[in-house]
Image 1 (cartoon, rainbow, N blue to C red):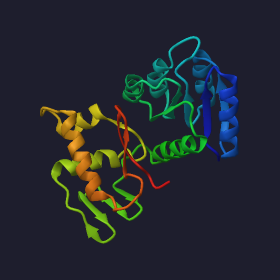
Image 2: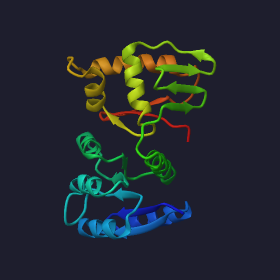
Image 3: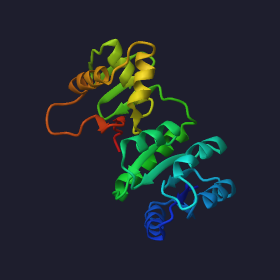
Image 4: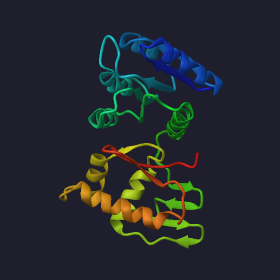
Length: 227
């Protein structure tokens, strides 16, 4: 049975583009043009995912994120022209699974949706073993292998990598990583940047390949999935 996606956008052309893209990818689609319609469709249709614009005519889309989270377990991807860092951080902190800025590439949007739905399909349970190409991260044993070679990480590097691996493919904000990995210690973003730099040096193959850990400028970091 195909996943059902609720598209919430007041722009009919954007809704049409998203509908066509999603239908071609095998999804069922329902639509809403404002916040009131979104909540009504959400309650009636029980979608598996929501693509949510923030600039709705009757309310700020940010306010919908916690309501959708409270009333169901659908994944929520914000798709908005707003590109300010504080908007992205607010959406993610309120519970959105991802933030895609307009104009967007439809293939990237579909890939991010697949990742979010896969995570939901796991019942919300954090994975114990994360595989990315020849990189294998065992969260229980706190070991990391690239092929047959064990990579030696510091405790803090393990902590940060585990945080990203539990949310593979999704952005984890700076504040969330700092709170989880530094706790009550004095947490400064400079410390996190040093750990990320060291992780990249240890995890990545030499040569012109995409970074294993992607930087969402001013927002946070994402462990890239294979697909």
